[in-house]
Image 1: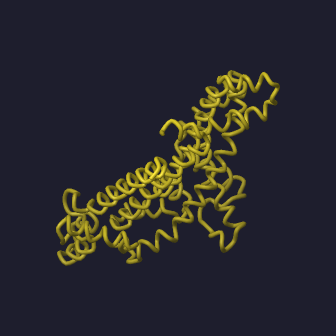
Image 2: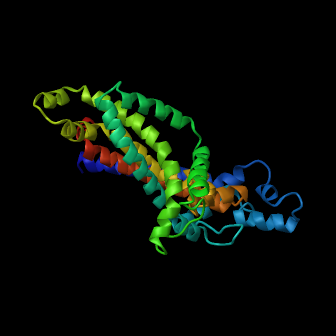
Image 3: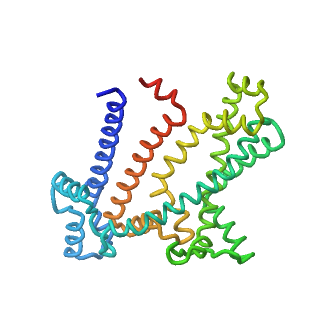
Length: 319
């Protein structure tokens, strides 16, 4: 077996080990919590029968190792248990909500990249210029604004004052694509505008380093145009950190958009996690943790492969 398949097998093995550890930790969480999760969820007025039924649903009536091993086997077969509040299968809940969160993530990334790319390219080409100073100051100010404040401002402006967009709610794209787009705009802007500031600062810094390289100066000396120089010589090697941010965002979006989804009543994984945490619905919380871990590990693996495609020198350095 050559070195490249061995490295690929090693990365897959490490990814599987991480997923296994996260899954075991998530499944064992109710057993490791101090006190009784049943009493915390049901309240002090719960009867012994209710407490016993709740603990049985979590597997707390079994030994921690036996319960975790049984739940792990069920999870590997696609059975993540049932919600303690609704009784619905957790896999069904996730199957309905993951596409919504991914749609929101894609829309937010389009907003962020659509703003960050031109601003970062122009700022790096003319460092210290008017646009560069304005973008730098604006990015710092923008990052200081909490996401929920930005969301509330957008709701006040577009839904209350202008009345051109709905404040909350969701319409599946399969039912009405136009109405789906109207409900998607505000949460996508709330997430995307914040990420645009991070993307702009990250890409600008990388572009400045790349534009100082000898091969860029040589291309400029040969008379290569500004647009071509930026897009063909500078952007590709400078985009590696941006690829990392976007890739990791795929995984973290599965559980990290709690605030935005709750604010705009978007029925995604984030709002599902928020409701489960408030309702002490441990099977749902455990499933969200596991699915988020799968997303992060898968995204990290894909980003690593993209690194080698964008910059083949990375593959050469690791031989």
